[in-house]
Length: 284
Ligand code: BGC
Image (cartoon, rainbow, N blue to C red; front, side, top):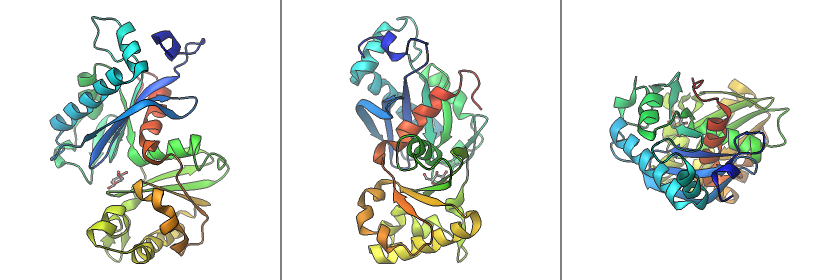
């Protein structure tokens, strides 16, 4: 892949897209090979500005996108061959957001600055990036990546519940391979308290819990999800899934469970897949 033409197959279908994953502590971005489900070249990681106001976050996302395009050989050659006078990014863009974005508007953002609520994030970011971009929830993005290329690949005949364990608990529900978007089941209340306050990976650190104690809290949460959703399988993602050997066997649940396979790239890859699958101008 050395020139812009090679970013597209002979039928003109897009084969490469920019994926951006906005998290509570960092923003990750990378160009994604959509056939292989892999980040091409270096991913760029920048800190999430604090407070993550619309202006600060937009600047940080634009900085990360520009860095991907200049750092990556594919992005640099694509940018060079794009119309010099245009600021338009040469590939589709998908952005994973830790909240709910409906028809371009942020309607829920539990772990970000409140000033996001009611903002048209697709317009704001699209104008700043110089091309339309498509938003989806970060856990939905990770789920798309796992169902397409990772742990859920052979499970398109089942109901799969992907849980991302990080700053919060993200949930992505798939039934027969189709995503039911924007489930916010990390906020189910357990004992009168939002579940992510005691069962997320950040809660483990904040409360100083060892693996058995945290696994007991996560089990209680998962049993609640079993009762409400009856999934056929769980996929556990988020940074802590890389240490699954320390805790997966401690879970006291009835549903088969597997660790995520795409690790830190899941959000970037799922965002890029989504960005390339929604036609320009048709994003919701
Ligand atoms: C947010 C979700 C997000 C999850 C993981 C939760 O606090 O409400 O939208 O998917 O954190 O980032």
